[in-house]
Image (cartoon, rainbow, N blue to C red; front, top):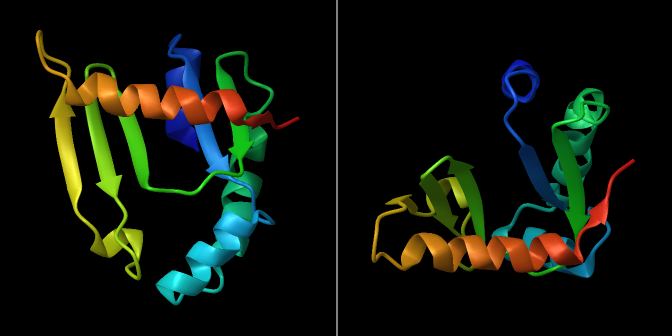
Length: 124
Protein backbone atom coordinates (compact mmCIF):
# COMPACT_ATOMS: atom_id res chain seq x y z
CA UNK A 1 0.00 0.00 0.00
CA UNK A 2 2.80 2.38 0.88
CA UNK A 3 4.35 1.82 -2.55
CA UNK A 4 1.13 2.81 -4.35
CA UNK A 5 0.76 5.88 -2.14
CA UNK A 6 4.44 6.86 -2.56
CA UNK A 7 4.43 6.43 -6.35
CA UNK A 8 1.19 8.38 -6.74
CA UNK A 9 2.61 11.10 -4.48
CA UNK A 10 5.66 11.30 -6.75
CA UNK A 11 3.44 11.95 -9.77
CA UNK A 12 3.31 8.41 -11.19
CA UNK A 13 -0.02 7.44 -12.75
CA UNK A 14 -1.02 4.15 -11.10
CA UNK A 15 -3.62 2.00 -12.87
CA UNK A 16 -4.79 -1.23 -11.31
CA UNK A 17 -7.14 -3.63 -13.04
CA UNK A 18 -8.68 -6.42 -10.98
CA UNK A 19 -11.11 -9.19 -11.79
CA UNK A 20 -14.70 -8.82 -10.57
CA UNK A 21 -15.11 -11.31 -7.76
CA UNK A 22 -18.59 -12.39 -8.88
CA UNK A 23 -17.70 -12.69 -12.58
CA UNK A 24 -18.26 -16.18 -14.00
CA UNK A 25 -14.74 -15.96 -15.45
CA UNK A 26 -13.19 -15.53 -11.97
CA UNK A 27 -15.28 -18.33 -10.50
CA UNK A 28 -14.35 -20.68 -13.38
CA UNK A 29 -10.66 -19.83 -13.09
CA UNK A 30 -10.73 -20.56 -9.37
CA UNK A 31 -12.36 -23.92 -10.04
CA UNK A 32 -9.89 -24.76 -12.84
CA UNK A 33 -6.89 -23.89 -10.68
CA UNK A 34 -8.23 -25.77 -7.68
CA UNK A 35 -8.38 -22.46 -5.83
CA UNK A 36 -12.04 -21.84 -4.97
CA UNK A 37 -11.04 -18.83 -2.83
CA UNK A 38 -9.87 -16.91 -5.93
CA UNK A 39 -13.02 -14.77 -6.03
CA UNK A 40 -12.49 -13.86 -2.38
CA UNK A 41 -8.91 -12.88 -3.19
CA UNK A 42 -10.25 -10.38 -5.73
CA UNK A 43 -12.41 -8.88 -2.97
CA UNK A 44 -9.62 -8.79 -0.41
CA UNK A 45 -7.22 -7.13 -2.86
CA UNK A 46 -9.80 -4.44 -3.56
CA UNK A 47 -10.34 -3.95 0.17
CA UNK A 48 -6.58 -3.66 0.65
CA UNK A 49 -6.38 -0.98 -2.06
CA UNK A 50 -9.47 0.93 -0.92
CA UNK A 51 -7.47 3.54 1.00
CA UNK A 52 -5.68 4.60 -2.20
CA UNK A 53 -8.83 5.17 -4.26
CA UNK A 54 -9.07 8.83 -3.28
CA UNK A 55 -5.57 9.63 -4.53
CA UNK A 56 -5.59 11.71 -7.73
CA UNK A 57 -2.97 9.58 -9.51
CA UNK A 58 -4.61 6.22 -8.71
CA UNK A 59 -7.26 4.64 -10.92
CA UNK A 60 -8.67 1.22 -10.02
CA UNK A 61 -11.04 -0.70 -12.28
CA UNK A 62 -12.71 -4.08 -12.19
CA UNK A 63 -13.17 -6.28 -15.26
CA UNK A 64 -15.15 -9.37 -16.19
CA UNK A 65 -12.89 -10.84 -18.88
CA UNK A 66 -11.06 -14.15 -18.93
CA UNK A 67 -7.63 -13.74 -17.36
CA UNK A 68 -4.84 -14.97 -19.61
CA UNK A 69 -1.98 -13.17 -17.87
CA UNK A 70 -1.12 -10.64 -15.22
CA UNK A 71 0.78 -7.59 -16.41
CA UNK A 72 2.92 -5.35 -14.22
CA UNK A 73 4.39 -2.29 -15.90
CA UNK A 74 7.25 -0.22 -14.55
CA UNK A 75 8.12 2.46 -17.12
CA UNK A 76 9.72 0.67 -20.06
CA UNK A 77 9.71 -2.72 -18.31
CA UNK A 78 6.93 -5.27 -18.10
CA UNK A 79 6.56 -8.38 -16.03
CA UNK A 80 4.06 -10.69 -17.69
CA UNK A 81 2.86 -13.66 -15.63
CA UNK A 82 1.38 -16.02 -18.19
CA UNK A 83 -1.36 -18.21 -16.74
CA UNK A 84 -1.49 -21.89 -17.55
CA UNK A 85 -4.69 -23.91 -17.34
CA UNK A 86 -4.98 -25.69 -14.04
CA UNK A 87 -1.98 -23.96 -12.44
CA UNK A 88 -1.79 -21.19 -9.88
CA UNK A 89 -0.34 -17.94 -11.21
CA UNK A 90 2.55 -18.33 -8.77
CA UNK A 91 3.52 -21.58 -10.52
CA UNK A 92 3.35 -20.12 -14.01
CA UNK A 93 6.20 -18.44 -15.90
CA UNK A 94 6.97 -14.73 -15.68
CA UNK A 95 8.50 -12.94 -18.65
CA UNK A 96 10.53 -9.75 -18.18
CA UNK A 97 10.08 -7.57 -21.26
CA UNK A 98 11.71 -4.28 -22.20
CA UNK A 99 10.26 -1.63 -24.52
CA UNK A 100 12.95 -1.44 -27.18
CA UNK A 101 12.94 0.17 -30.64
CA UNK A 102 11.58 -2.29 -33.17
CA UNK A 103 10.38 -4.69 -30.50
CA UNK A 104 6.78 -5.86 -30.62
CA UNK A 105 6.05 -7.86 -27.46
CA UNK A 106 5.90 -4.86 -25.11
CA UNK A 107 3.31 -3.12 -27.28
CA UNK A 108 1.46 -6.41 -27.81
CA UNK A 109 0.88 -6.89 -24.08
CA UNK A 110 0.15 -3.21 -23.46
CA UNK A 111 -2.49 -3.27 -26.21
CA UNK A 112 -4.05 -6.27 -24.49
CA UNK A 113 -4.08 -4.42 -21.16
CA UNK A 114 -5.62 -1.31 -22.76
CA UNK A 115 -8.37 -3.40 -24.39
CA UNK A 116 -9.39 -4.87 -21.03
CA UNK A 117 -8.96 -1.48 -19.32
CA UNK A 118 -11.60 -0.04 -21.66
CA UNK A 119 -14.08 -2.69 -20.55
CA UNK A 120 -13.38 -2.08 -16.87
CA UNK A 121 -15.70 -0.50 -14.36
CA UNK A 122 -14.21 2.33 -12.31
CA UNK A 123 -14.28 1.54 -8.62
CA UNK A 124 -15.65 4.30 -6.42
